[in-house]
Image: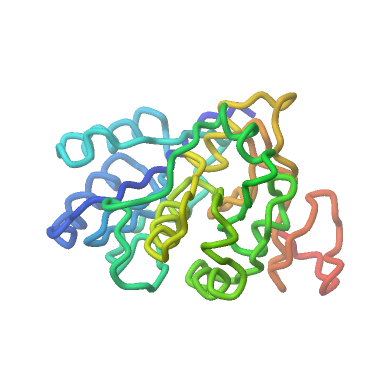
Amino acid sequence: MAESILVATFYKFLRLPDFRDLRGPLLARCQASGVRGTILLAEEGINATIAGEPGAVEQVLRYLRSDRRFADLAVKESTHTRIPFRRMKVRLKREIVALKMAGIDPNRQAGTYIEPEDWNSLITRDDVLLIDARNDYEVKMGSFNNAINPETDSFHELPEYFAEHLDPQQHTRIAMYCTGGIRCEKASAYLLQLGFETVYQLRGGILRYLEEVEPAASLWQGECFVFDERVSLDHSLQKGGIVICDDCKAMLKATDTDCPQCGSRNIL
């Protein structure tokens, strides 16, 4: 079946004092275009994944970019055979990604961007500590070789991990990555505020790395978890081979006929 649906992921940290006023018109534009997904709006910015026919998604992106504050919105794209969302949601939040630490502003300071083509040479250096900023269940699906897994269940648990395991005097070069880059924007800003000397982040996250780095040159191992019905993406940014058990929510291979955790055959 042809991959006819465009999935667009994007975020931007910026001051949006009128974010509440943006919700209604943006939701109406998405619904009129037949686009589904989730958009988060907060005073600190926007975070979204939307999907639909390519022309419909482009309509929504043009609408957003008509606001000069979103004119430079960077979008990561992938495709699928159907829209991997059941409805369109535009939600108002305190944070577009919840670290739950006051005063963290990636617009003031954030980690140094590393382009995907330069990422391999950075993370293979002996003096760089590589940290996966995602949750434990995401890391188990795929990661970069030798990356540290903080084993968190939620993003807001990272500060506790940093406090217990990192030292600004010892860890002078830290590299972090996440799915699309948004969590590293905030986590790197937090580390710099704590006094860590040099913090790097993968520009565009894993999704951009998989898009731009050829598999033969890639240091990525496994699949990349995504927060929609596709569950995971392979190195070609196509739906991966992992499914979710409908009963216990365990991650399984698509070839599994029974869930090894609960024995269910009711698998999505």
